[in-house]
Length: 123
Image (tube, rainbow, N blue to C red; front, side, top):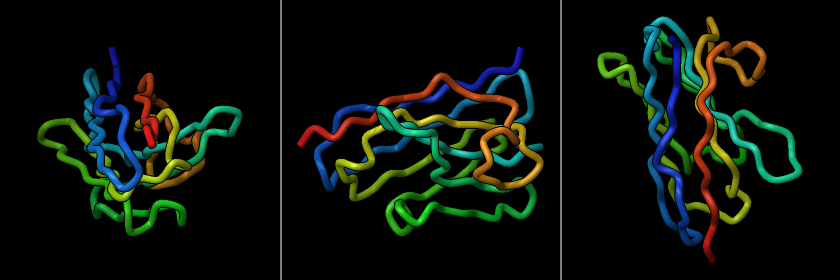
């Protein structure tokens, strides 16, 4: 059974860092693009970053560019999102998604989703 589990969320003060981990099982993560999305209370889910399979092309939303870093380790069937210089507006549930044939922020291109991990600014 295909499954994605995110971990690494928590309470962090503004300016702090977190590393989110996305672990896949039941399918080969390396076949697909991986996307990280987030959803703040009362807002739509938005794309934060994505990384293609193959050439590893990477995209970031403007709001997180130069602060967040996406990476993948296909041997471990795992992806990561490093969050630096966190801001209150980054508070959200962060979701990992896979299954898209290419990197996109169009959420419906992804067939596999995790349950999400919460980041809350504690400032």
